[in-house]
Image (cartoon, rainbow, N blue to C red; front, side):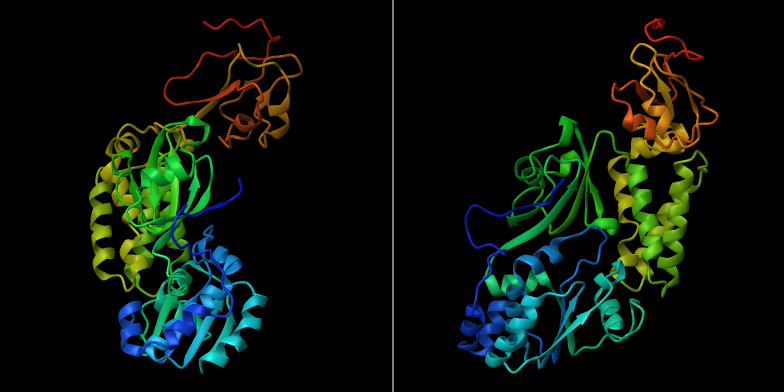
Length: 422
C-alpha cells in the first residue's frame, strides 16, 4: 500500500516549496525582538541542530518533508538562527539531498551562518535530543549526558512551519486503514476524522479496535477516545483482529533492543516488562505479574534519564487501562481472544471447504500438512508451529484459526466432497 500525502483543502500547507527564501528575507527586515515573539524562540543559542531524519523505524514524515520541501527546512533553519542569534547550524540527514547543497550558499549570502551537513545512521535513540548531540560528536547515541545549553535541536517539522507559516501538524497513519498516509491537519481535527475521513476508514470493513499514537513509547487509544484532537507523530491503527497484548509486547521488545543502555531503570525495566508480556502471550503468567508491571513502570517513569525510558511502559499501561478484559484473558484464562498469540492458537482445515489444491502443502516449513490433489488436507497439530503461512495462502479460506473451541475436521485425508460437517 502506497503512502499518500493528504493536505488541507484550505490554508497554507507545509508541503509548499518556495524559491528565493521569501520568509527569511521578511525575517531579516524585522527586529530580533519581534522575530522572537513571532517564532516563539526567545532563548539565545550559538548552535542549532536540525533533525531532518526519521528516528523511528517505519516513520517517514521527515524524509517526506526532506524530499518535498528541502528549501523549507533550510529556510526555517535560517529563520531560527536569526531569532536565536546562532552562528552555526548542523543539518543531520540520513540521505544526501542535492537541493540543499545547491541552496546553502544562496542562503549564506543573506545570512552569515556556518552550516554543516552531517550524514548519520538514524536510530531510535537519535530521536532524543541529548543522544543526537552525542551522536554528532562521534559518540554512541546515548541519552542523558551533559546537555550543552548553547545548542538547540529542532525537528524538520518545526523548521518548515517557520518557513511556510503553516499552522498545521503532520501525522503518519499506518496499519488497518484503507489508505495509509501522511496527513496534514489543522489543530482540533479529531482522530476519528483522520482515520475515517482522510484515511477512508478501516481496511476490509473490519471494526476499529485501537490507535497506538506516538510510536513504540506511545499510548493506546480506544474507540471512545477518537473524538479527542489528534497529536503529531505516528499512529498505528489496529482492527478487531489485532491483539493489544501482542502489540504492547512488540513495543517493549523494540524499546528494550533500541534503548541506549545508559540508565539501569530503562535498560532493565524495558527488558523485564518485555519478558512479562512474552510470558503473558505463552501461558506462563504469575499472580503477581500485574503488580510487578505497575511497580516497574512507576520506577521507570520516575527515575529514567530521558523521555524514552520515562514513557517506555506507556503502551502496556494504557493497554491495561483500556483493554483490561483482553489482558485478563491472557493472564487468567490463558486465551488470546484475537487469536494472535501463537500459544493460544491452532490451525484447522475445514473439510466442507477444502478443494485439495495442495497450495498449503507447498508452504508449510514443517511438513505438518497431509494430503494430495483432490483430497481434503489435514494439519498435524503436534507438528504445526502456528506460523500461519498456510492460512495466508489458502485461496478458498478453508484454513481457520481456533482457540479453545475447535472445529470438527477429518482425522485423515479423504476425497474432496465426502466430508459432512457434524
